[in-house]
Image (tube, rainbow over all chains, first blue to last red; front, side, top):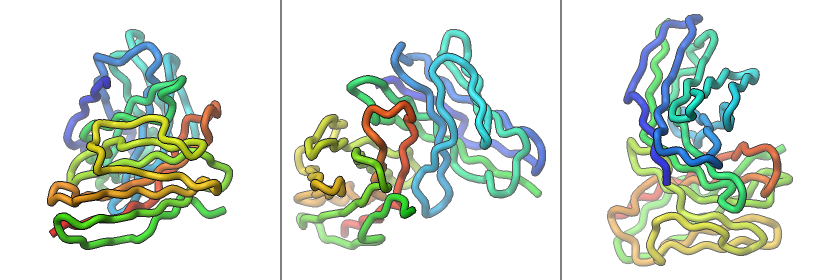
Length: 112
Length: 114
């Protein structure tokens, strides 16, 4: 399974943009790039996913490198509620659908 | 609309015992995946159930087994518990083959083995 590497922690100020990087240099051609976040005492929450093109939704934007070996989750205006552990698991499509391979995650701290 | 529910919330067992954890998927979902999350680590995939069969399995020993019922709910069984099995066990549900790859996770069951 392809692995992901993320910074252990990052800090941001409220209402400023946050760019969370993820390295997945061994990604295969059929792997989707997902982002989930996890608050204390909760299960992970889906944020966004993509395959090759950049993606936007109401929560965030996902920028995927042209070679797909890295990606960046962009929170446009951080709020205190965005403080969480962010993961960028890879998820295979096709018959391997549903299996997510998580790394260590990035602890995001948001300062008021 | 209830999301993914898991029971029990917390559980304490002794080494060598057996445990059963339960999961009810989100309404409309037919696939259940189980993950183990050790403290300070990301979740690790255990296995996935669809149409009452195990479809995929991660790198976990046979002590970990599961079941899916006709109503799509699922159980995770762990035999001969080891201290290292202490973790948060997460259940995630989805609709198999859908274009939406989003998985919905439950709050987890915290298992402590003493």
